[in-house]
Length: 406
Image (cartoon, rainbow, N blue to C red):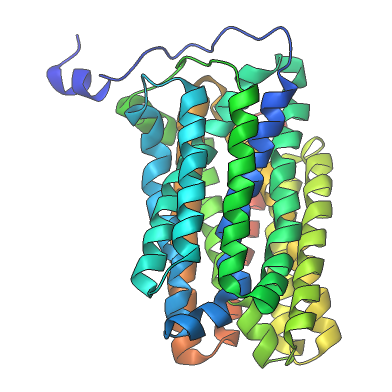
């Protein structure tokens, strides 16, 4: 028998069954999701490459400006798990259009921000778009192609992350130096507008299916593989963003790079991430545990190299490039982990995954900012190394065994 409290928890439930499998792939729609990922990740990463001029222009410290990352993360953490519940009657096609429109609005507000408060407001809007998109994208991709084409479709969508990782930081730093940091956000708005046009033209109608209520979300969170996966995400994402948010400040102060060299090193980070994404996909097919454990271990090693040999321009460049390669493998490993752990509730698992990422990003950016302002920029990389080392240990000791997620 269902009591009133339980009934309230399950009020939004439409169905927990998987939707009917598609017979013909909608590749145009898949590409439009990749464009959406590219635009969102680009906008998310821009503060890292524009931190110094943003802080100077707005009259705040670098640690305070770094909280633009925190604002996006906190809102994204709330939006991700609640998006499926709050929009349970909305066609997923329309929802994706709305989320992309929020990306455009956020970028425009940031481009014309006259204060830190206005900039943080823009990043709050981005957090809603980012959290909602990541929570929905995996489940949407499952409905756009037949089951046997899902790995290929996911690799196309995640290619948006790789390309954004290559382009966002170095181009943001370069464009910011030539035309000012605001121009980078204007470009992000244009990318969002192009993405919206492609999505309107390609995404078919996708009525809500398999949308769960709050109780299902909690039930999914209780699964052992999901719990370990969430711990893994908290460790690796908080460590990464504690260091990466302040990488430009580190490169300018320790190896004393000028803006051109910072742009080159960030480009190397992005290129490393692109190849890391490819290597991660290759390795995940063979050993998810190894892929999940090796990536944070490489980030921990890179952090140590920056702390010990960071004054060397060559060693700093090598360490940042290796860091990019390692982090590039994380999205493939984490998404595969979570989808396999809860294939029957993809939207709920996706929401939990994104929430964990955003909480971890906020933790990393906040703690990194405190460390930078009170103990120097190098201290943020000490925390990054420790957190990612613990993530690697978690994956190797508690991560999924071959063929099972029990």
